[in-house]
Amino acid sequence: MPHQSTELSHKSRHGWLIAGVVILLLAAAGGLSVWIDGKATVTGASAARDSMGKPGNRPQPVQVLAARQADFSVWLDAIGTVIPNRVVTVRTRVDGVLQKLAFREGHRVKKGDLLAEIDAHPFQILLDQAQGQLIRDQALLDNAQRDLVRYKDLWAKDAASRQQLDTQEALVRQYQGALAIDRAQVEHARLQLSYTRILAPLDGQIGLRQTDVGNLVRANDVPGLAVITQTQPANLIFALPERHLSTLRTRQTRQPLRVEAWDVGQRERLAVGRLLSLDNQIDTATGTIRLKAEFDNHDARLYANQFVNVRLLLEVRPQVLQIPVNAIQRGSRGAFVYRVATDGHLAVVPVTPDASEAGWTAIAVGDAIKVGDRLVVDGADRLREGAMVRVVTMEKGVASNAQSGASLSGKSSPGEAKHMGKGKPPAQ
Image: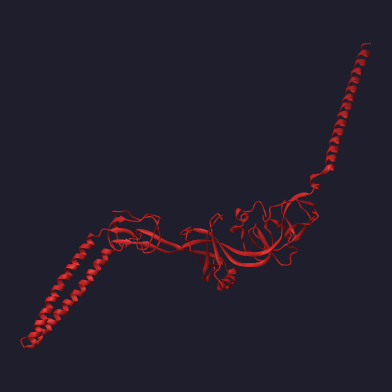
């Protein structure tokens, strides 16, 4: 009997274990069903939202600007250095102690202005000595001339020999020669005395002083007292690629080409001048030709040895078809633009950019673009051929909100003007 009771207890526990496993399986199946139902609900809601209007299916907003036809200016850009018209190092021409500096550093001076004074006492003494010697020899000459008159009277009366007369005449000429030397000595001493006052040799701007009052200065001192630069007018030296040489020479023979100088940041135009000359040889190391331009520089905005951005107006092409720079896209097949039709559909049109200026690019003759075609300049991401777009009104004449302030104000920025060969895309 005990053995039978134990067997019944074992079977009872085994049954309960099987029942527990079944219950767990049923619970898991129920949770899976709930999860699948929830997922289906979420998917259905998302599909319902997409069916109500997926963002990719709505027309994408874009900004456009119409192609135009107008005169097109072709500029050449370079980096140049302002060269003074004249540079003079002010040095003393005599040795002496510097007693006075009469100029203000960095200020403009006029030709003839007093710049410095050297101690003049030693030179005044030399002048006095030369003048004393002149007076002495003048007295000797006067006495010799009176004696010559007497000898001539005596010789006429046969009271003196011809030799005595000739000797007296030679003595007079000797004193005349000494007197000429004395006069030259006086003039030399006077000139040396004048050198103690150092005057400005030209109009210009004087730099910082190189020595102080009280120092002994010499005529062969290398630094000198100061340097004067003349930048009115000012010259500008810059270089351009030799491929422009033929056009430059042709245009320059007709009339001097316009040259503009801009600041380093290419934000402000400093001066407007004219092309003065071309160098007589090409630099073989760089393949460039050096040019010189001249500026009046009345407002003194150009400074000696200043680095500036240079813009040279090569030519003005009349009535050229132009498209906005920001409308140009790049692809595996080259440059193209998105053209918006009247019904809002897009068309991909290949173009051949030529030269760019102030946010506009000239395109080659034969491109399938006409005046007035609306071209996408903003919002071109994820566009494709035949897609629908919604045009957002733009301010007239502005190719992009990212353009420079010079373009927005109607002035061209030198960074936007890059002359390029035909068939090459403009710099972006």
